Image (cartoon, rainbow, N blue to C red; front, side, top):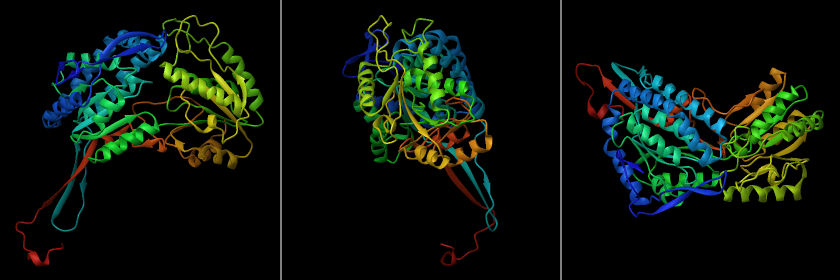
Length: 484
């Protein structure tokens, strides 16, 4: 682990295995940190928090720029670690790593541009606000996009003067440890960035509940997010939660069907469907539903599922045996609830023992079915047909989740009207893309609170301080006649 600028083992000397989902075999053993290790890391971050806060913003930005350069220089190793640890196929992992500098550079530019404001008040007085860092921030990172999700939160946190303690997911800790090497090479002050590896109920819970942690960012399941929120509320930490999703992909009769089909495949097959914003509900207008599914089936027959290090692979394995079993259980539920249209099992031509699942589509799904309401987090899509716009809006908003939505239509007025009525944190029209460093990302309802990325993320990593100044030469008011 990386604590206070030093590489160390867990206090108890325990380790646990990290597994290659392409083969099911052990890659390495990493430290099993517990509460004492978390306390060491938080204490190290707290000890330098004030110094880092008052480090010139331009100097903080320079360190982040150097870190960005090191990420680019080590991109191939980082991509290989993501592929072997999380199941991203190698070319996709390369694309993801090549995008990481965009997030770092965005906050390099923002570091010295986040300011307070002056406020007009009555009398000979002046008021102003300053934005200050929270202090120690905890970053509990998921296993699906371990490096990108970590960077999207630590970049603004560090740029704005916070110190960081990262707890990567136990299934995918390797890229966070390599990233810590790069932080060390970039000459960040010791203690500003720390990584504690371990299990969620042990290290993760200890980090969320630590009284010196002033801000918590968590990405993961709604169930675990509730636990993190409860732990953080005990010491009134500021929370930023990106939780589950059941995102609708809406196709209107006038949509460009080939584009919409491509968007659908990206939406529920990217990273084998292990994406919070996955478009796992296909809401197809009755007039085009059959044609859409015919085209989708033809495209999916050509999809290559296999080892992430095979350059021909288009979809790799799911992250773990536990996740594989969970998804296969949902597929069996779907077979009982609905009509299996495409897929439904393990690809026949995959030769290894990895955790591979075919892209799977169920048709004629009831809106109340489990596969239509529960987050599966795998390459499984549920088709729900609709006819009237009001019925569509009811279908979309009936979900307990509200993270993301996609609309395919050539009618921009229709698209904007639907987008306004959807209860979700994000809506994309005639495209499928998840996140950019300059646009806010987050959800409503059971999909979380707060926003990552964009200028809106400033509120996730700062607090407002008001300063009032009396400009009169002397205070003439009798204390008994004062306003308060």
